[in-house]
Length: 135
Image (cartoon, rainbow, N blue to C red; front, side, top):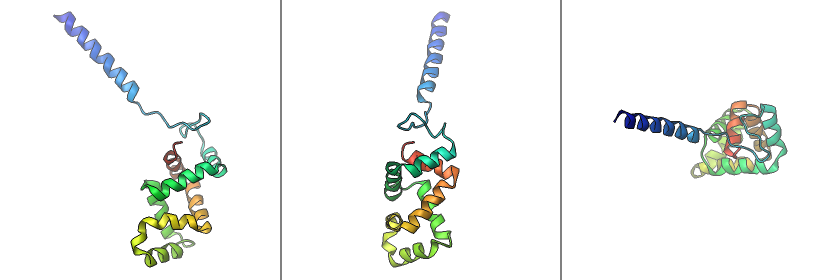
């Protein structure tokens, strides 16, 4: 009887280790085998700035999906003295189109540049943005 309990305990412990090992989250990998876990901030910034495909994916994510990055970006655009007037004017003239703000931002080169500058100049937000696009 004690042998059976010992065997069952051993099996349980092994299953716990196997489950823990299998369920540990792995960082998303990029197409070239790197991940945001191993990339430096400058590498992430360069990757995003030099990769039109990555920029397009980020644009789609920010337009179509709510995220912490999107919320921070909108708050930045609303508070930045250089972008505030355009964003507030858009929201005032289109109160029903709050969800369309990101489309408006990406249709305006100046706002797009400010937004991308905000994302790439903040390492934490840059890392979150990269994870949005599967990096």
